Amino acid sequence: MEYLEFSRQQVTNLQTSLQCEFLRTNKAGSYANSTIVNCNTRKYHGLLVCPIKEIDGENYVLLSSLDETVIVEKTPFQLATHKFGNDIYPTGYKYIESYKNSPVTTVVFRVGGLVLQKEMVLVDNDERFLIRYTVLSSTMPATLQLRPFLAFRKVHELTHANTGANTRHLVIENGISNCLYEYFPTVNMQLSKKNEFVSAPDWYRNFTYDRESERGYECSEDLFTPGFFEVTLKEGESVVFSAGLKPIKTTTLKGMFEKETKGRDVQSNFEECLRHAARQFMYRSPKGCEVIASFPWTGLWGRDSLVSLPGLTLAQGDWDTCRAVLDTMSNDIDGYVYKNKGNIEHTNTESIDTALWYIRSVQQFNWNTKDVALTRKLYQKKVEEILNTYMSGENGNVIMHDNGLLYLPDENKALTWVDAKVNGVPVVKRWGYVVEVNALWYNAICFALELITKKSFQDKWKDIPAKIEKSFDEMFWDDEHGYLADFCVNDYKDFSMRPSQIFGASLPFSPLEDEKRHSILEHVRKELLAPCGIRTLSPKSQNYVGTITGTIEERDYAYHNGGVLMWLLAPYAEAYLKLHGR
Image (cartoon, rainbow, N blue to C red; front, side):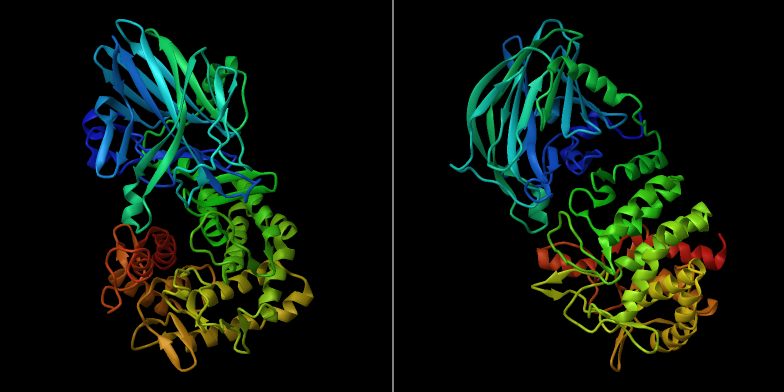
């Protein structure tokens, strides 16, 4: 078996297969996402999900699913799988013989004497989803019916049967086009072979998405179907289905499918899967190159994008893409303020540390390319602008005090990476002097002093690192605890055992001596390190929550009070390597 291949036994066990999802993305920012049995379990699932710039640039589910029925000797076999309330219907997963995800998503069905192969691909540079159906073996011709289900709604929402939808379709070459609502693009559904389209417009009600129910959200929606396509195939014959935002000449579909599958990676081991996954997060638009922070939720989210950028690009020797993203984000950062945008349910329009993560990525770009002259040429001006803005305090959300440290004056704003809110109040109030913000601040200044050699900059900043070293130690360190406070405000110091202090030990420039960094790392290892990440709060704390379940509010609270986050393994590993060498 290939690395990402599932046997019949695995696929037909819904407890396994409904937990396994495939994801395909393209450079246009679109994606296709569902479970491996094509039973949607999230409102984010869909076969054609696209950003629609004409509305608001956010992602919209257009084609939710495509149901197949095979008619053999006048007997119909429904190959689709859906959840309606507590019922699974149809139960097409029972006919799946095998599933693999490399180099393209491939499902094989066996129905009596018929073996049907289904291959799915998202076109790389076009908002178009293709499915190729091939009859691998059959004693007689079979009839294939394809019924599309349309949503036409934002990924965070659900749709319901309504009289406002335009349920009429237009006939185009070997297919139809639909546009349910004004301002939406048209979805053009076509086949590579002449077919019959049977018009039967209707709403199918109560599609149920269990993952949304688990997350505390509404979980039921209605989807519209305009009817179904019908085509006859004999043994060895293929037909390609296309769903795209533009109509296409159908004689080109088979060639397009072949072209899209050539050169795609075969993921035969875990490392190849990681490398392939890394490339899927790059989004190229007329504006430039950006990192999608996560699929299918977040979209473009500055801090997450910059934290992950070096690992997605520089770790693979891809300096050009790293530079393209940094160049794009240079235009998005105004002073230190980065306006977050994209598909997210809990939005904070500003963040305190995104610009500091930008400098950290520039630092890693410089270290990997070993081309200081290029880094100066590209990013020196923006780095200086960012530091000067922090020093000026002109925004009001952060102030540089005389002790050299940055201070967040508003307790009701969640401006660090711990940014979840419940009823408008931060889940974890972190204000005043915040530990990782000041660790990043110190590192940024030290790096800038290496990068920017002009006398005026050196004179302005050269004495500040020593001031911060003294203040940082006095403000955050405690000999009795043996680790750093999470934040300090007035006379209060919060010594909840949290992971943000790792950055005081992991960044290239640390304001702490090695002995204290060793102590921080040991406390994190004992209390926060888990097999697949770092806990956000020690189990010894009375506020600790061990699992992220329940209502939206309960999950938001648990996320930052004990939830295990994988991304924090990176600074932990960096700190460990710095101190131990291996």
